[in-house]
Length: 182
Ligand code: IMP
Ligand code: MG
Image 1 (tube, rainbow, N blue to C red):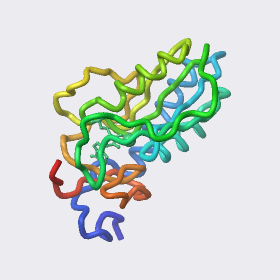
Image 2 (cartoon, helix red, strand yellow):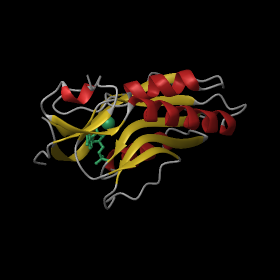
Image 3 (cartoon, rainbow, N blue to C red):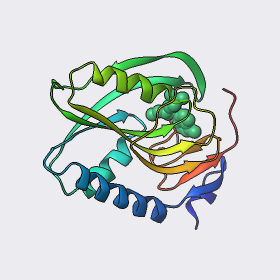
């Protein structure tokens, strides 16, 4: 049975498990080449990036370390809040590090812009970003990801780490659900 038919709220698969795996491997190859001799610190943005980080990191052929940071932008299933809140910080000094920030999605761009500024202020030698999906909409906060998996339509998506009200994060595809009020 197709995974998307199991859950009543999910109506369309946008990215299949196979498509995602293929793209993650391509990005990992590119990142491994770009970070040759640099031992990047991969920083996953919780909670959404936990799956993309796990798959991407395991496909890298260069030594790297893993950190997590947690922020909150949307709460209670899609209410946009005005400011990004830092909920949990990394556990190490980032001075002189080559950081690769790994994020699930760019919607307005607010979260990623906030995090890049925050990490640059920590004295990192470089801060780059790897994002699984970007919504095709006007990005209020102009930030161009260094590595991007896919462009997707401007609608609420779930799966592969992405949630709706904390549900569906472990779906192995990315699927659209009915629009939610923001
Ligand atoms: P931005 O700051 O507006 O770019 O929003 C980014 C954050 O909002 C992401 O890290 C997600 O946690 C959340 N988000 C935005 N759009 C979606 C979506 O379609 N599905 C699930 N989470 C989303
Ligand atoms: Mg997120």
